[in-house]
Each structure stands twice: as C-alpha cells, then as structure tokens.
Length: 321
Image 1 (cartoon, helix red, strand yellow):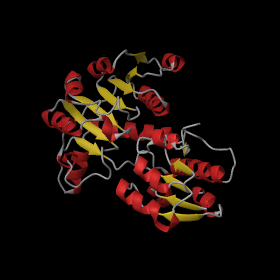
Image 2 (cartoon, helix red, strand yellow; image 1 turned 180 degrees about the vertical axis):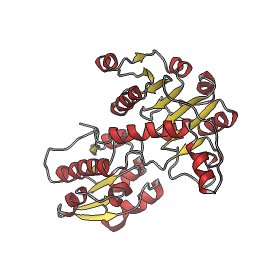
Image 3 (cartoon, rainbow, N blue to C red; image 1 turned 30 degrees about the horizontal axis):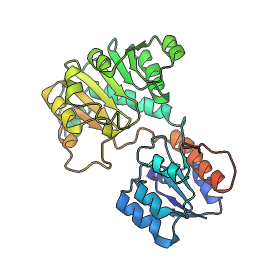
Image 4 (cartoon, one colour; image 1 turned 60 degrees about the horizontal axis):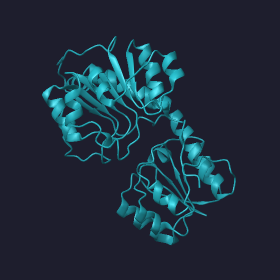
C-alpha cells in the first residue's frame, strides 16, 4: 500500500511515531504541507495514487477526493481540526476521515496562556528592542483579577480555564455544549450569547471550531462591543476573525493587543498586515507542536491509518457511516 505523508510536524519531530510507519510495510511518500488544492491534485494523480493520506492542514477538497478515488481508502488527519477537509463530501463517497482528539489540549492551553502573558507585557516590542541593542520600555498590564472570556468549552477551553484560575482570572464562558459540573467545579459563569461575553471580558480567548456560523465571528461589530483595551487570543483557526478589522482595532487602541497562533491562509504572506503592527503577536501554528504532543498526535494518527488499512478496528473515526 502507498501512503502520502504531508504533515511537517510529524516529519520534523523525532519520536516513536516514525516507527509505526516504518514497520507498516507500506510505501511512504513525503511532501511538505500545508499544501493547497492545486498541488494536492498533482500529488494524488501522480504515480498511481495513494491508499491513504496522513495529512495536516492540507486542502482536501471535493476535487482532491475525486482525483484520489477510487484508490484512496482513508484520510487520517494529524490533529483535531477538520475544516481543511471536505468531510461531508468524503462521507458522501463513503471515505472515512480519521482524527486524533484528546492529544494536544495541554500544549495548546499552555501556548494560549503564553500568548496572554506575551501580549499583556508587550513581549514582542521589548524583545525586538533589546535584540537591537536598545532599552525601550513600554508599560504592560497584569492578568490577575481580570475577566477571561472563553468561546468554546471543549478540551482545550477547559484546560485554559484551569490555568486561568491559577493566575487569578475570573472566568466566563459561551458554549453550545456546556459542561455544568465542570463549570461548577471551576466557578465558571456561563453567558447566554457571544455578545454578552464580548462586552464583559477583559481577555477573550477563542476555542471553537471554524464553521459557516463561526467564520468571521470577530469583526468590526463584535470588536465594537468589547471593552476598550481588551486582549484577544486565538489559538483555534484564523478564519474566526476578520483580520483587517483586528488590525484596525489594534492600531486604534480598541484592542490592547492580539495574540494568535493561526492566520486565515497559512503560511502567512510576507506582506500580511499583521507583520507591521507591534501589538499583534503571531506564532506559526506551533501551539500543538511540542515533543510530547507531537508523539501523541503522531502515534494516534499513524495507528489510525495503519490499523484501518490492515483491517484492525482500533481507530478513531470522525464520519461514521
């Protein structure tokens, strides 16, 4: 069998996850993602195609799926976000899409808190100045006793709340799937709408899926509802924010700053406006990439793929038929 491996995190990080593919007896073809639709079409059409894809945030569109069939038997996502895959179309073609829930919430939560600290203390401005031999200093703000608003109470959102409580933050949450026992344990206040959360929070952290309903959730209107000097954090998906509106809010001072691990189109363009605004801190979708989490994700994704192709039922399936 022939496998296309595109996730760079999997490939670049040493660990036992490599052994699973190496001992599978399958031919592994490697490419460097994230890969756009046109390049994915070229890859899946060349050399007779693939039995499985082990992918990251590559564009697995309906066209790519059609081009990969009938040989393609399974898509194994390295990670939990499925917005780059047309899961509905794959399901209509009875093509399983496997993923890896429960493997990266610790490291993404830590990264989220790191961005909060970095934005509140103006790390980028200070680091750049000192590296240039200057001693420029800009007064930051404390996180203690501020109100943290969490959009989405999934695994990552819960881990951020645990760490936020340790920092002395007051927590409010908007979530369609609210865990009442968890909320009670961590003294979380649930709000009825995102608008209510935007108006009440000093820090807003996004931990929701990218869907037609959430795309552009942060826009000119929602930013206007926020407190003057609010901090916005996004370690979920770049498409949750209208990037031009966030730039304007950061430049005007409406936002104290924006910390994100994602942009709408990755990798970031050299001329992206985020690169010129000092109170915007962007990391290159690295929040889930630690030595520990890469091995957890990699082993789960590789096991999903190999087990499925070998007929072993021990795999996670996102679109059960």
